Image (cartoon, rainbow, N blue to C red):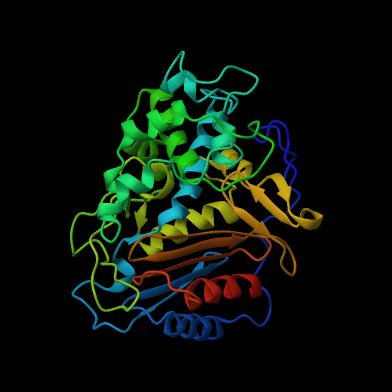
Length: 361
């Protein structure tokens, strides 16, 4: 695997195309049929597949459970690791507006005098691009989380522990040289951004991302059955508690309605005119390539794969009782937000159906 010495910013400009008109032959009826088939394939108590092409939306909802008092498409769903797309956009917005560059050492904000000195310092850019050298989770996470493993393990690892674990950790590889997916790293980034701006994480995300994009159906905490979908175990029968991200908010705490997720994705597919246009374009730029033939491409916020006509950008996520897949294609102006209320299982059809839908549009 290879990565730039300074993974982000400083990446080359995006070479993908901007939003194009819908392809011929993709009418609304055909789109709805495909979405309904994906909902059925999800085999979950609740499932919503919402797609947008050129601003025209089609939303299909269903599930194995009886409908509740609130339409499924109006509830907020836990999106797990897809939260990282919001965190990446937040960092890009802070860089675009000037307070930060992305090259600042995270330890400078979280523990002056305790972190590693340059040139081996873990920067904000390393954290969001998974090149910090940090593992997926801190070494002490499992022992502390085990008593709550089937309910809310992350809730047992609060912010002070995340920060302390980061300041004590010594990466095995020089930051910026290897890609390793890390919930730990993005969680640390959230705390560093809050410290750098002097603003609590929830307020920072709301002020810089949610409010500018009009995402009033997005939050970081559950508020009740009339606003939030209820997750279920693998068998789809037993409900599980609402997810508590503990000190990992920046890595997995966002919950949103399908309509808000589409709004978020539409802004990425066609940034022109948005107040966050600069940041939205920045998070589409490739920052590293890895794997055989450098086939795996990553941007600040997204996994990027080739598709017929242009690249597709996506991120998936899961909690103990819900799953999500979000993605967009600038070449066709297509966005997809898919959510369901069943814990991930081996060979689960949900993500596969969502990925196939986006790649074929």
